[in-house]
Image (cartoon, rainbow, N blue to C red; front, side, top):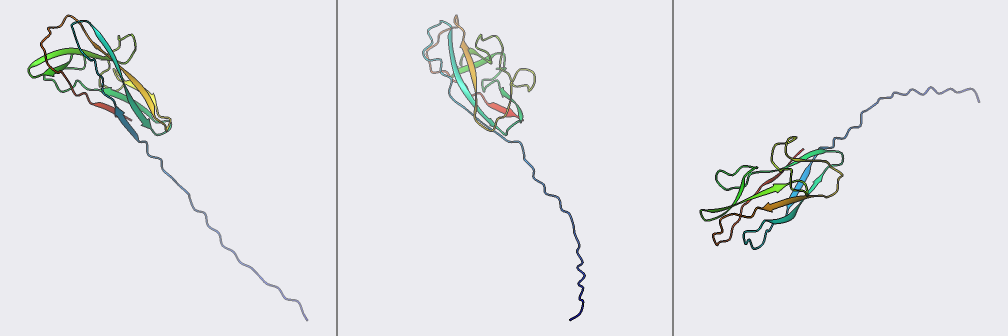
Length: 145
């Protein structure tokens, strides 16, 4: 019998919990084919697929291609030394050139965490010199985020 007491001592601490989400993007593109050219203006479309982290702003640019002397305003397909001029646009009216300077002549968007499709509107103007051959160019699409 008797009275017993027990003293309990405690100590506490705090800790921080952290996580970092790093913005990331992927990009892919399909072939843009004008088909057979007979001297009449041809229009064609293709798609670029962008997948960026949710809420991440991005810009998609298209370079001038690989033809010597080509620019984003004067793109050219080649067959040997022969060339065909063509243009790439970011709107269906084919009035806004799609270039490669973020915030100036690129297409902007905000990531959703899912695939987003962007349409490339191509035009092969008529009234060009017709020299038989298979013409091509390689354009690089770049996503800046």
